[in-house]
Amino acid sequence: MADGTTHRVLRLLGLLQARRTWTGPELAAELGVTDRCVRRDVARLRELGYPVNASQGVGGGYQLGAGTALPPLLLDSDEAIATTLSLLLAAGGTVTGAADATLRTLAKLDQVLPPRLRAEVRAIAETTAILDRGGTGVDGGDLMLLARATRDRVRVRFAYERADGSRAERDVEPSGLVATGRWWYLLAWDIDRDDWRTFRVDRLSALVVTTWRCARPAHPDPATYVQGAVTTAPYRHRTRTRVALPPERLRALVGPGTASVEADPEPGWSLLVAGADDLEWMALRLAEIDAPLEVLEPPELRTAAARLSERLAAMADPGSAPGGSAG
Image 1: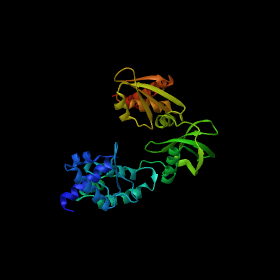
Image 2 (image 1 turned 120 degrees about the vertical axis):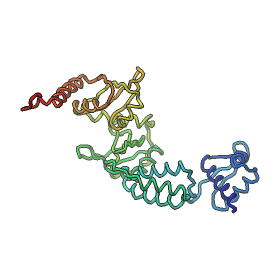
Image 3 (image 1 turned 90 degrees about the vertical axis):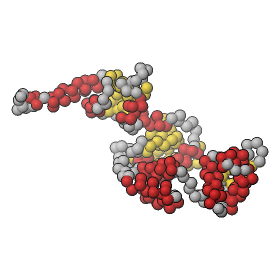
Image 4 (image 1 turned 60 degrees about the vertical axis):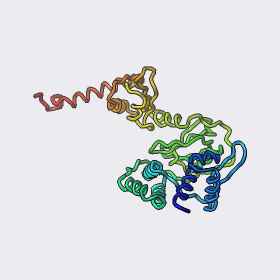
């Protein structure tokens, strides 16, 4: 094919990958050619092994079908950079084996990209370092099994290791997976306990997907439920504080796995909900937020803040230390 035709056919392939169905006139307008030229280019794609389906009538058009092999990847600059960054972040993630798979994928990406994009992608990959996020890695196969069971609405069984090290068999109806950056969580309806539960996926073992259909409806918002479970439920104290910052600014300061942020009725303020075993530790964390605060609950948090304030004042006064003297 001539260079102009090759470029047009590649553009046509990119359009078919970007949207499910195109009519002939739509493709012709996008490519600046006639309907007849579109039909010829579609025929060229079929000769190259791309399954392009065509249907007649209302709602008909051209559609890129599912092939037996992955077609060559067509990426513009923004897509190539976004793909590279996503792969690099995955390398520092918590899925076992993801780092090796990421390197293999980056190598394949390097082979198929045009020279200009290849140089940009290499620059990002060679100058970016990803710190290990910590946490125990989860098995990618288990994640896939849980995702499919959630999609297909079937029960799963597994052995679960509790925080105290004891183990128990669980029979659950999965509702969703939630990643917090350090951990993966499964939200599921626990059959034996007749209630919703969250499970850390790295503590699962001997996972079995059954053919029993789920009887419970899917939970409406797994992310919100899991956030509440990991930020407040495991702790002795649940704290609520009003902060003189808009929600979007406050969320940038606290991670979703640390606290939840809600809009306050008063504009410019937010409600911060978090859990803590040590209220003085919580008071110190709140003091790091450079904005006015109002403690709503528990009242013991104010007492803890007062004790912390006294100790900080003593640290700032050299004359208060044993053996110290004022200047």
